[in-house]
Length: 143
Image 1 (cartoon, rainbow, N blue to C red):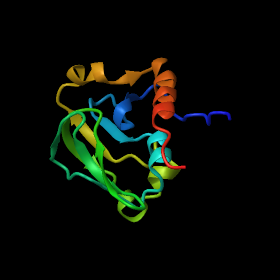
Image 2 (cartoon, rainbow, N blue to C red):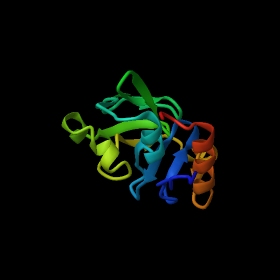
Image 3 (cartoon, rainbow, N blue to C red):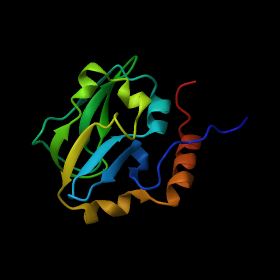
């Protein structure tokens, strides 16, 4: 059996345990979302609801919820800070999370309060592929 390739752009920062990512922007903000592997492991998402603008979040804490076929799951944030913006498009089109998890399927944009504090828990660059493959082997997801 061949392993399916894992889509995980190395320029992003990943909290592997929770299968979420952060893209840092020049203005200091970070866009966050669910990894393609996390989506594949969880199954189809029927609803995505990020926390509201102005809400403070901590690394590994909830940044929103998604509704799956048989459950509602908290989505963790890879970075702590304050929610600046939420992806309003997800209210009517939650399938964007599946179709474009690292682009139009983002959940929220956060102003990190201390990225350097959060950085040691994140995987970035060349280590991403190995970390994702290891996670996929340990957590095979739905059959």
